[in-house]
Image (cartoon, rainbow, N blue to C red; front, side, top):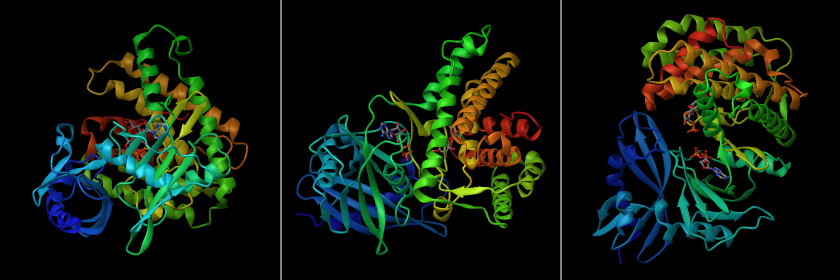
Length: 462
Ligand SMILES: Nc1ncnc2c1ncn2[C@@H]1O[C@H](COP(=O)(O)OP(=O)(O)O)[C@@H](O)[C@H]1O
Ligand SMILES: O=P(O)(O)O[C@H]1O[C@H](CO)[C@@H](O[C@H]2O[C@H](CO)[C@@H](O)[C@H](O)[C@H]2O)[C@H](O)[C@H]1O
C-alpha cells in the first residue's frame, strides 16, 4: 500500500497549476512560487483513501495556509473526473469535497466527537446532529466550500485558514449563545492545528432548506419594476420595501445581540485618524491598480476626511464585516445573516477588531445600489431605466434604514443621523468593490465607479 505521506509529497508538485483554477483560491492575481505540506491527516485508509491536507502556498512575500480534502482510489468514477488533480504513485488523486461516498465521514466524526491526529471534531453542547448522511456541495461560487447533509446540516470548510478561532464560528457561537433569531443554529465544528496553534477548519450549522438569498429576491424585484415602467413602485407586484425594512430590523437586532454577547466600547480619540488613514491607504492602493478610479481620488479623500469631524460618542463592537444581499437568507420565519468572516481580502487582525456597526449598514446600502444597477450592465443607455434603477435603490435603502432605526434605539439609532460617517463608509466599501470587480468581474466595474461619482457629487443619501 502507498504511504499517504509519499502520495502527498508527490501531489503538492501538481498544486501550483491546479490551485489558481479553484474558485475559492484567493491568490489568483499572483504567481505561486512554492506549495509545501504543513499537515496530513488520514481520515479513511484503504481504497478509497481520504486525506485532510493543510498546505502553505507561497506567493511573493506571502505564505497562506489552505486546507484540501484529497481522495485517492484505483478506479476514479467518471463523475469525479473533473475533480482530478494528478496521478501519483499510479493512483488518481482528486479533490474530494464532491465525493458523497467520502464526505459523510466528516459528519460522522462530528457526531462521534472524535479526534484524529491533530484534528478535533466537536458537537456543540446540546446539539442534535444526525449522522450517516451523504453530502452535496453547495453549487454557488463561494470563497469556501460548503457541504449539505440531507436537509439537516451544512458544513462549511474554510479554505484559506485564519490562525485561531475563525470569526465566523466565534460570532455564530456568541449569537447562538444569546438566542439570536437571525442566525442558523450552530451544531458543531472542526479544529485543526497550524504551527502548533488551534485553527478552525470547519463549522456545522442547521441547514435551512426553504431559504432564499436576499440578492435573488432583490434582483427579481428590480426586474419586476423595470418590466412595469408605468407603475409606481409600491404598486409593482415584487416590491421589496417591506422586506428591506424587515432586513434592517434583523441587522439591528444582530448588532444589539453582538453587543450583548461580546460587549462594545466607545471609540478612542485616535480611532477617527486611524480610520481615515486606512481609507486613504486603500484608495491609494486601489487607484494604482485601477486607473479608472484616478479621477475620483480628490473627492474621495475629502469625503474620508469628514470622518474626523464625527460628533458624539461612536460605539465600536463586533460586526458582520462583509454584509451584502448575498449574505442574508429569507426563511419562513424571517431574515438570517450568514458568513461572519469579514471581507475575504482583509488582514486577519482587521477581521477580529471592534468596528462601527455603521460599516454593515453601509455594506447593505451598497448592495441595494448593486441590485438596482446590475440590470444596466452591458445594456444600451436608457435614461428611463437608469432613473427606475435609482428609484428602486432609494426606496429600498430608505426602507432598510427605517427598519434599522426602529429596532436600534440604543447606540446608533437611525443610521441617517450619522450622514458623514455613513457616506465615508459607503465610499470606502465602493473603493473595495472597485478592486474586487477589477480582479474578478471587470464588466461590473461600472457599478461601484458610477456610485462613487454619484455619491461624491452629493446624490444618493438614504
Ligand atoms: N444555514 C444555511 N441554510 C441554508 N443554506 C445556507 C446556510 N448557510 C449557508 N447557506 C448557503 O451556502 C452558501 C455559502 O455560504 P457562505 O457562508 O456564504 O459561504 P462562503 O464563505 O463560501 O461565501 C450561501 O450562499 C447559502 O446559499
Ligand atoms: O460573498 P463573498 O464573501 O465572497 O463577498 C465577495 O463577493 C461578493 C460578490 O459575490 C462581493 O459583493 C459585491 O457584489 C454583490 C453582488 O454580486 C453586491 O451585492 C455587493 O454589495 C457587492 O459588494 C463582495 O464585495 C466580496 O467581498
